[in-house]
Image 1 (tube, rainbow, N blue to C red):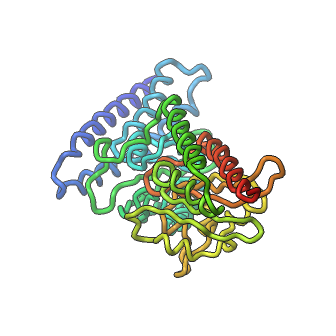
Image 2 (image 1 turned 30 degrees about the vertical axis):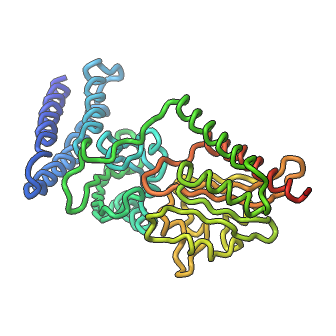
Image 3 (image 1 turned 135 degrees about the horizontal axis):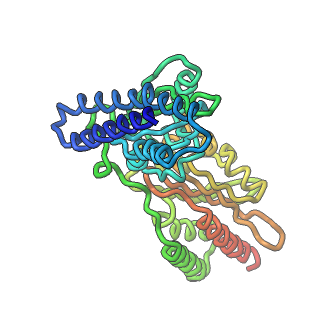
Length: 378
């Protein structure tokens, strides 16, 4: 019991030092490197001293754990959550096991959403392979590593990722502790970060989708369209901006023809003309939707070539910084005939498409397909 009390005193002293580090975030920028070095030293202390100590206590303790021991275990978890630096615990495949509060603020991703997903999926495409490789090296015991990466939601800001090995109690495999910090910038904080993605109420989300459905129905019924391409353009303009940053419309199924491309006015990396010049047959997502007739919803798409490449040979999804997409076939209910395909992109920090939004888009796609089919009967 004496060892347990000593361990508790050490943890309490560590918590006090963490509180001092939190207060030090307001020091002048020139002094911040010293503060960051101190924070990393404290993390090393947890990994090298406190955690093995805790493992020894749990291995030699009695089977009936006392309430004090349980409180200390909870305290250890609380320390992880309250560390002033963004910290994540991942496995050798970069799958997130824990993400602390500072980490959610820094990445803009809720901890509940991040858990169970690869941390590499939140990075820009060019950095993912290097991050996975360095994580595997640390996990197999090749020593600590550090590299510069970029978050997909903020690709212009370099982020320094420091990786160190950690063996959780009672587990056969080594985990990896990742510390994130802005490279050459001030230490991240809850006030300075982008903040966690807001969790809007179900009523608000439903009302927004109902407004979108009403706008789409109004557009499709506002006077007869002369061509199928005109129907697609009307639908694309309803979806553009309020529902998606990019809207790409392709007519047909066996022989696809691109009719409409609408994108952000301030997009510098890729222009609407680049997507207009694409051959839809070179876009695997579009071809699969046209043949299979099933909606594709992807969040942080893994395959950079899923929507083909532009004239320069660069993947469209990478150049446009696409963080989520919907690829929806325009299908008639009665016979399953595909009239065309709508592809929607959301980019940067915008909230990813949800299942509810995908269902609403599926409903609108049937209305659009019906409007296109009605032109053939005139």
